[in-house]
Amino acid sequence: MEAGEVLEEEGLQYFKNPGKRKKIDVIFQINKGLFDFAGAKGSTKIDGFINYQIKLEVTQDEDDGGDVVAASASATVQGLLLQTQDVTFGHRLEMPRIDKGKKVKISVEILDAAVHENAKLKLQAYGYSLLEDKD
Image (spheres, one colour):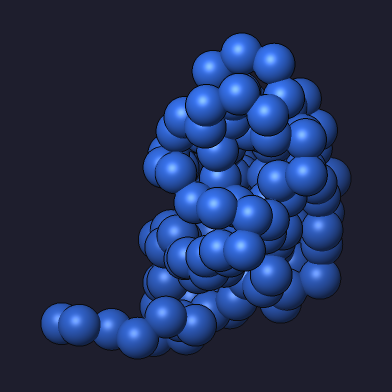
């Protein structure tokens, strides 16, 4: 994904039961490192960064008010990883109860980025309680 690019996927069933619905995890992978160049390509490597926004919308019938943005979050990943280093990380969002919800639609938008041309941010997975709880 590149700056300004938006990825949207729909298909996760919305659960009304808070035990199943409450935690939605979004798993990302950064491939080919995370860095930028201080000047032209091949110059000194410096920290790269990716600033992104996640939105979770719950679909409803038009008669029930249409789709609702139920959760959103913005974050920045920054660091200096070489092209041989990939990293996988997760982002957890909490979902409120929406009485007539049907499906969960996710959208991820890259708001800003400074990375070398081969770096990639991939949406690996999203779903209910994918990450281990520490509570």
